[in-house]
Image (cartoon, rainbow over all chains, first blue to last red; front, side, top):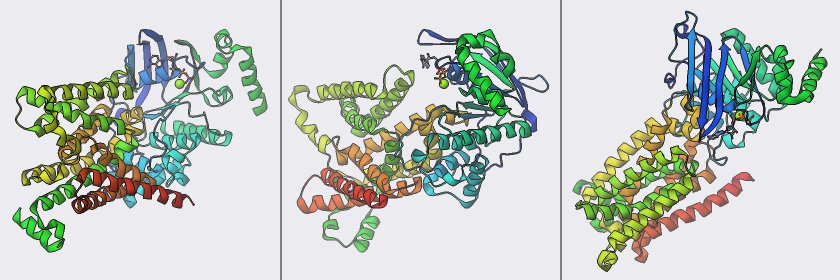
Length: 268
Length: 280
Ligand SMILES: Nc1ncnc2c1ncn2[C@@H]1O[C@H](COP(=O)(O)OP(=O)(O)OP(=O)(O)O)[C@@H](O)[C@H]1O
Ligand SMILES: [Mg+2]
C-alpha cells in the first residue's frame, strides 16, 4: 500500500506534484480482533489542508481506526485515497507519530542516531556524515527539537519524544500526517507550539492531518473537522456542531462541554 | 594457510602460538568475535538475550535430528535447524498468541528435551559432551574458511540492514510507515544470529555461547552514548576477551570457552565501574 520511503539522502521538502492527495474516504470500515468487534461501519472523510480530529473516550477505538487507516490491522469496507482528478492513489505518503513507543530506555542510541537511521542508508554504527547531521538538525529544528540531538532516546521526556517523532514524520513531507495523541505528556507551551507547527504545515503544504486528541479546548481551537468515535463514527462535522450535539453529551456528559466552552470564553 | 601461519609467527612471536592448533584457534577467534560483537548490540538493545540463549540450546536438537536423518555434517544440521527455529519463533511471535518469552521458553525446552532424547539413545550422551563446553583447539583450516565467509557476509548485511533494524526495534509501525519491511527485518536478524551462533557453538559450547554474544554488548552499553561507540566497544571487548581467554586457557589448561566468557565478564564488571565514573 505504501511507497517505499527509504530513499537515502533525498531532499524531501519539495512535494511531489504527481501524487497530490485530495481526500481519503473510509466507507463501511470495520475491524474485528480476537472475536471482538472493535469498529463497525465507520464512514469518515479526511480532507487535504484540513485538520481532522478524532475524539472519544479511552477504548473508543481511535487508535484502532488509525491503525486500520495505516494498513496495520486487517479491516472490512473500503479506504480510498483520491487525488484532485478523482483518481485513486496507491502510493500514499504517510507520516505517523505513534501514541506510545516501547523500547529499552537504557539503549545507547541518541536522537541523532535514530533520526539519521530513518534518513540515510549509511548505517549509523559507522558514524554520521556532516551532511546527514545537518539534515537531521534541520528536521529537528522544524519541531523545535534541535537541542536534543545528542540526548539518548531513552532519556527524552514524553513531550520531547513526541517532538522528535513529529520531526521524523515530516520528512519526507507526507500527504497524510497521522498524530495519535501527541498532546499527552507535552506541557501547555509545548502543546501550542506543536499544534501551531502542524497547522502552519497544513496551510503551507496542504497536508491532510488526522489527530487523535483528548484536549477538547485545543480541539475546538485548532480542528477543522471533528469526528466523535465510539466503536463507530457517531458524528462528523465542524467543532461547534459536534460539541453542541446530543451525541457529544451522551459520550462525554455535560461537564466536558462546559469545560470546553469555558476554555473558549477564556480565549475570548 | 602456511602464509597465514608464517605471518602470525612474524607478527606475534608468542610461545603459545607455536602450535598450529593454537594458530587456528586464534584465527577463529579473530574472525568470530567481531561478528558476535556487532550482532550483540542489537540483541541487547532489543532485549533478545533469552532468544539467543534458547537458540544456542537448539543446537542439540539440530545435531540429534541430523543424526536421525543421516546428515553427515553436524554443522549443516545445526545451521538448518537453527535457521528454521529462528524463523518459526518470529512467525509465532507475530500471531500474538502468547508473550514472546513464553513462546521461546516452550520451544526451547521442547527442543532441548527432544535433542537430549535422541543424543542419549543407548546411554551414549558422553561422546557429545564436548558440545556442551566446546573445544576451540579442534578448529580446522576449512572451519576458518567458513568463518571468514560468515564474517564478510555478516558485516555486509550489517551494513545494509542496520538502520532499518534499528527503526524496527524502536517502533515497528513507525518503521512500516516509512516503507521498511519489518517482518523481513526481524527474520533476517534472527537468522543472522542463528548462523553466527551455530558457527561458534562447537568452539565455545552450548552452555556459554550466549554469554559471548551478550556480555560484550552489555558491557559496551555501559560505556557508550551512541550507536557508533556501542558497536566499537562491543567489538573491541569481544575481541580482547576472546584473545585473552584463549591465552589464559592455554596457560592454565582449562576450557577456552569458559576462560573467554570469564574475561568478558571481567570486562562487564569494569564497564559497570566505568558507568559509575561517567555519571559522576
Ligand atoms: N490487538 C487487540 N486485540 C483485541 N482487542 C484490542 C486490541 N487492541 C485494542 N483492543 C481493544 O480495542 C478497543 C479500542 O482500543 P483503542 O486502542 O483503539 O482505543 P483508543 O480510542 O485509542 O483509546 P485511548 O484513548 O485510551 O488511546 C479497546 O477496548 C481495546 O481493549
Ligand atoms: Mg489510543
